[in-house]
Image (cartoon, rainbow over the protein chains, first blue to last red):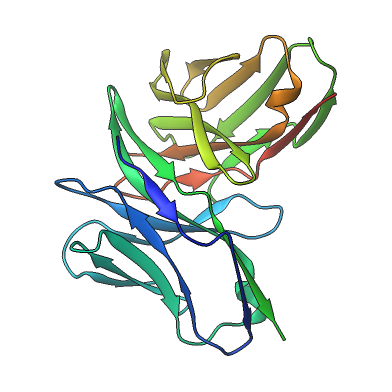
Length: 115
Length: 113
């Protein structure tokens, strides 16, 4: 079964500073990776995904993640964060079940952006 | 708007009572999922559905049952609620196999006293 590990439960950072949220996945022949974001009292929203092709994927709001097969990592980065980026971020991987696929989530990383 | 609504959004109940959470989608997605979210555990899959009347267990299915009689509705039932089932429950839906996007509802917060 696939799994992901998010190495930090909370990451505090000042506004306009860079940030990296770390995610490692269990090795597999093929892997599809995702980052989801959850703002307070809301459901999860897709931030970005890696399915194949370029190992660097970007979101519309300035986040990027790099698929690194040798290190089995999919870290999320942003060069300059805003207060509005305060949220919980989940790394996820597709796992195959008998009748379809499911997303397996990491434990989440709370990003707290301070002014 | 992802077209997924959950009801009720908040519920407080007592141990031993039955509880049903409803998920309704308007986008004709084939796959639907129920997850629970607990601090330090992320989201864990309870049950999922791959079509009308087709459901299967996830990793934390004990104490839960589901039903899907129509494409748009996916019900989660706790037959006899326990305090360990206090959690936030999320419904999600996807069209084809999750290589696309998984759409989430806004969650149902359940407290079992």
